Image (tube, rainbow, N blue to C red; front, side, top):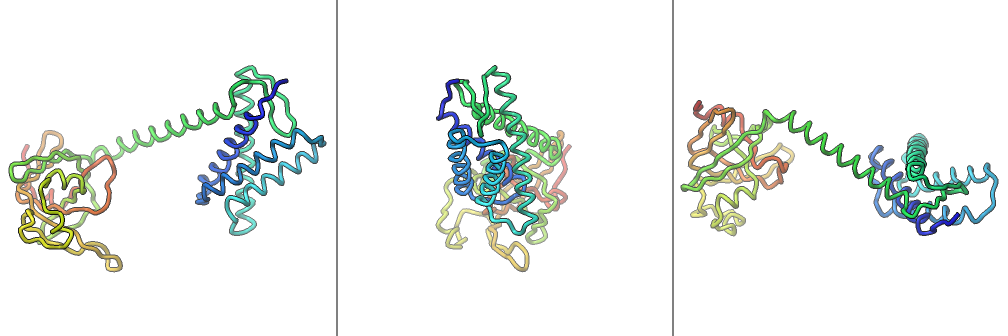
Length: 287
């Protein structure tokens, strides 16, 4: 049977890395990618030379177990013996599952196989690529399901927002955040991201803002207020806009001289601003 040595190398390298990555993700080991690659290469090197040596099944089994122990130890030093047993046990479990997948793929491809320390076959495409594609597809579907579920779960918390200032209107996606208890002068504060701020004030003097000089900066009633906990405080730029409207189910809550806060942090890509329950309760409801 003709065997492609490059396929043996590629299969072992990819599958070893997948196994170690699964252990890493499951147990949240935060292992370095470089160490997982070194461990994968170690397993690959042994796999190349095993078919060249005549060994009985017991010795071969002991070598494979010892190799697995070394590979697990390389990626992360265990806290204690119990943690190591869990890591190694999970590594073996994923090995059996992924090995079964490999045999399943080769069976579907009608490839001739043999076993001599490693799986050998005569197919002209690496089996590991099929496994890799399958895992990518699985990861994509899991992410898609989570996204759809998140949309259904939080759908009632998303609102269309219209901000108007100096006859310039900006439409945003808003998220009603019950944790946004920020207020200034007794008024709730809507928090927008930096990208939205740039669209609303394209010609503003940013150097003045960075230096903390708010005089003639182009913002109405601009000021800095302290935000955060007692142990971790910071300052947020607060300013007024002419009008802000929160739109949902053919109802509009209108706020004149609404207060906005500029966030230094990135928001979720699904929304541009955090709505304030307090500010909405202070607005005028139009049906």
